[in-house]
Image 1 (cartoon, rainbow, N blue to C red):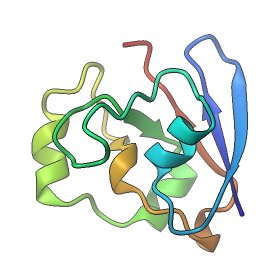
Image 2 (image 1 turned 90 degrees about the vertical axis):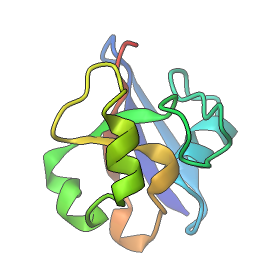
Image 3 (image 1 turned 120 degrees about the horizontal axis):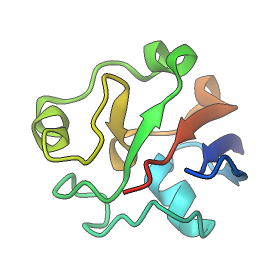
Length: 104
C-alpha cells in the first residue's frame, strides 16, 4: 500500500492508503477525500482532480503528458506544480506523496 497525504485548503491533512497501480485520483475518490471529484472517471477530460504536487515529489512523477498540460490551462488556480490526479499512477517511489487540493 502507498501512503498519500492530501492537504485540504483549510490545512487539514487527509492521509490515505492505496494500492500501487491506482491513480492518485482513485486513491482520493475511494477514500472520500473532499475536493477531488474525478468527474470524468480518470479520462483526462476535466479538471476536477486538479491538485498541487509538493516540490520534493515533482521529480518522481515525470513530465505531464501534453494532453494533461493542455487541460491544465483551464484549471482554476493553476501553478507550475499543478497536476491532474488521474494522470499520476502510484508506485513505491511515491510512498508518502503529499499534494494540496485547491479551494476551487
